[in-house]
Image (cartoon, rainbow, N blue to C red):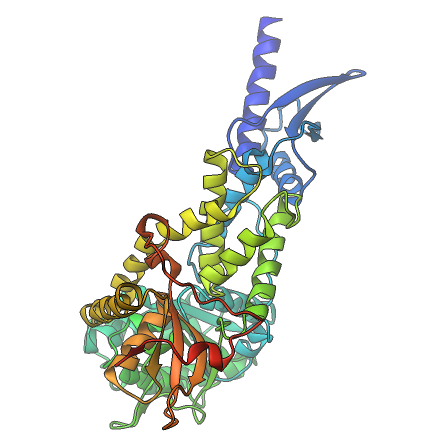
Length: 504
């Protein structure tokens, strides 16, 4: 009898650990129910939800065959009324958010339940999967990596050959070292796929590139011939994706694209480049190298800015609803107040990853403070804490210009917050070093565009209007008596913006 009890305890422990691993939450309660001669293991949850259904399926797959609960595990909805922030579902949601906001283009899988993909507003995923070269641009966190991942999925389902290179890995390399490593990895990763005789040829090319017998200046021609044979034999194009291309030194970007375009053009190969708008330099007019728009490539923009708050709010609502649906909830007042939701949309300026990460932090504050739902105060605390992460992003993405950007940000803060007690400003629309810095700060989410054409003076000179990111002056960095610019209707009227301070 003692051995039988021990065996059942071990079986329960194995099943419980597997279930908790799948949903990412420890301490799940359970009970054993006797039904006739069968003993059932039931896990207590707050709601029926896809994340639990998926977890039960996976548990049955990983359980030992001799586990007596094989096929006899279910979930039991606990009718006890528990506020959402402290519920099992909220804890499982936090894990889903953490897993889903990691920046991975392909390859790595975090395990556990995956939230269904939410399409972009204008079918950008299908545009990117077309046989053409594209330059995908937008602010940090708007979904460039997610778009690449979805386009790769679409292409692979069609049987197309794809290679994805994360340019973070090459960001410290210069000129010849960079060309050699990127060309080698492209050939090597393509050769690893099921491509028949072409695998050997591309492997040989990769080896010669690495040992220096094939120079980067001549390698594109050899690669081009091999690709032409490959795409004709397969009857399908080859797609090369370059994620976070802005991390390559700006002066080198056109030349590397020149090498890769030469390797792909006319051979059934297409180039897909993604990066921050203001830090991308795809073409050099002086050397005539790189990808020229629209001749060589087409732009795909992912930005949903505060110029159109309604569209940004709609997209973010759909994304959050998808995550909540995974744990059996909808976006109601019991989850998050409407005021808190709108505050979060406005504070994150339509950037999906920022929105989800900041919602997760707000939910953690609601848990800690035992709130019945996520409140505006929870959102404000999350906003204030997010500033350090954005500064870290600035250090990573713009390290070659970080001193200029930090100086410009300091100047804007002084002009707006200290001198004028307002969180918004104007900058002249004509090209200048100041405007370039402003655009880089925009892409790094330190400031946000609210209107691209304001004429405050009689002379009719055009200005762009921006607000400072809320993390700069709320939360722990709270500054008193700052007027916050929020549109009275759906969008800002020009008259509301004409009196904003100017950054000269």
